[in-house]
Image (cartoon, rainbow, N blue to C red; front, side, top):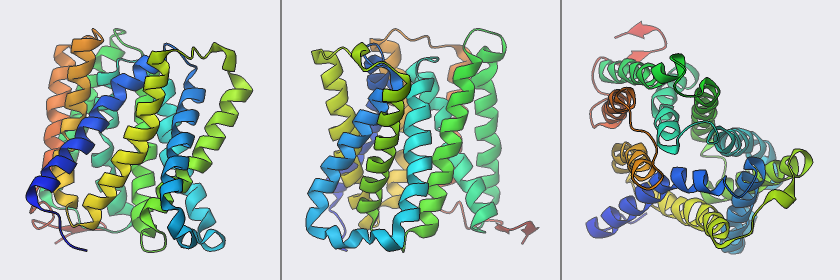
Length: 302
């Protein structure tokens, strides 16, 4: 596929990173007006339906009989665990702090891909793994001391782990399914499950259909899910994966900044120290040449 021009690439990456960074505080605000499962389910289902509507001319690429199990597995990890547990967890922690812990995900992806897909693991990536885990420990210190909810920390770690397994599984099966249809189907399947679960255990009458909640729902479904996903896959298909990866460290930084400035969320020393280490680990893992030095396959160092 033809590569994008530099200005288009820069604008596209900026759009994706900013939208992803804004997600966390926006979702946090939405929880003041809706139970978590219902909000997670509605925004995911609506976003999936909008994306599917746009993909209708390519409906044959769904290949449901062949790929249904892939859609279900990815929906479990990337929608039910990631979106569902994430939204529940945001009730317990500031949005910025929660995003910092969840962005341990790139570190976990490297580790899981090494064990499961037998991908190479360089000395630089190993260093990134160690730094990333140290950063999470520092961020969690406030939880150990009782200053923040340990339940929220556990839910953030579950979110990161589920997301990481989902990403590695998508990587493993990427040649079998259409990328955007996979996102649409996982969102529809997972969104139906989350919405149904919300209707079963939550009270739909607790949703306050005011302008703030509707704005959060529109942002979560249209901008965060449909548009950002479409732009992200456009970048991936144009050979810009490494550039997107190298800028993912900005997502929790934006989330922390927005949460601190506009939501009055606390900004502690342990959060700062942990965030710096996690961002450094993401940089080391995604930097060019990270997989070219002292490669490790399986358990043998070459």
